[in-house]
Image (cartoon, rainbow, N blue to C red; front, side):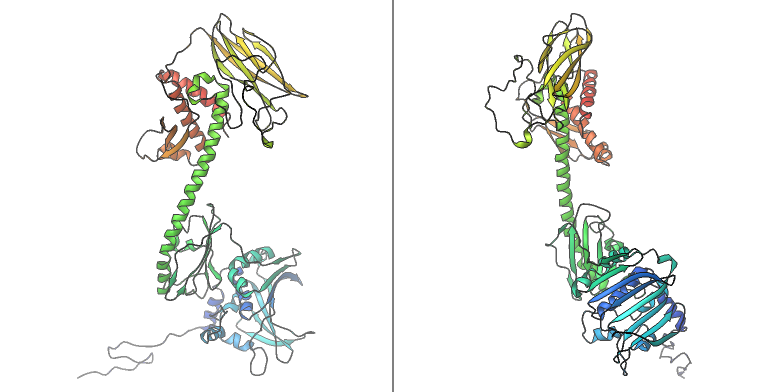
Length: 604
């Protein structure tokens, strides 16, 4: 015999005996309390009040922060359509207060109304996270002003009329007193938050929002936030059957402050899209992008309106953004390569300039493979070693003078240098030296400078005591001599010294045979992980190849200054190896220390 399903108070049983029923709220007031306190960000609550004004087609919204009768308050007034009226023409506050979670805006949107954002019917309750009581005023058809009064943690509400000398348009919200924890919210902070939170809603609606901070005595205009960087146009389309994803992305230099916001219908949902697990990697978290991604079909969590439901709409959004992420990653990689090339060029200029200065202070004939005597970019011609120079001769008289640009003319005397500043001279032989006078920008001062030379320490003599060039005659015994030159231009005076080692044992190194002398080399990178070489010289291309996968390079790349010094030391190593082929290891190390010392002094 078949038993019939038995009915129970909880509902009817179906054929398999399962009990069926409908969910219902057991404690209405507890549910309202949970909803009212679900908004964790008070500024988000202020943004919702402003959005209500925009939904009511307001053209002007004024937010006032002030203090009266010892209480801090926040007031939001607009000139919109106001609260919908009841059959008697009065604002229907009773409907607003008794239809929580049953928004009239949702019905209007279902009927095809556009430009409306609200849909949950719980925005008004967020005043609980701002202050203790809410006064909401709106005009009626009879010209009178009606006001609804609600208190935090109080299930009741009251509607009354209030006096008004002029006709009231729109809606006015006043929250007082503010909670102790948010009294520090300044008008400027409210301005910046709304400019980012409601950026597109402000732009599309044309509403004018003003923040009047009576306590700071300042007034602010809320302007939609403008992004910086290069606007990216050629990105893959991001559309689904549910709708189009609007992308407004800007490429910037890497900075942790750069973020891409997630929006829905012009209102920000998340400050950074990288907060979502699916977008928590490059390019979205690279710090190279600013802008927004507006997804109109996302489902938001009603309580905070700062969360997303991971439903099928969200899955479609993630999938359609994959090609966009790949294209952005390629653009960022290209920008990083360009930035690295620019930094490399700047670093190369710094290193070559430092080596030019160092080789002016060192004997050029000992490092002559790099053609130190060649004319540099400033048009300066260093000493041609071994060539006789008449007293006072510049050596350029045979060449036709070239027209100088304005910036090439030297300023007043700033410093003087002896070239070379350190050298080794055999006993009973001579060495020619030059005084280089320079202005503050290190341009050569060619006229109006008087030089006075002297031997301040050790033995030896000079062929003359004045002029730009002098010849030092070494004594017959080894010693360490110190030379000094004093330069004067009008009332400006400066001096420099040079050290000369007089020795009876000169180390002779065999120079590389053949090949034209070349200028200072460039450098390039080659990735060779696992290999121990740090750098090597390509003689054919006159390039120093740096292993950028070596552990030392990786360590040095943590800071720009450290990387600069590391590459400069690799330069010094390659120059010493090329300039002194076949020299013993001890001599190479001595030369390396010498060149590094004079180079790092000029490294910037």
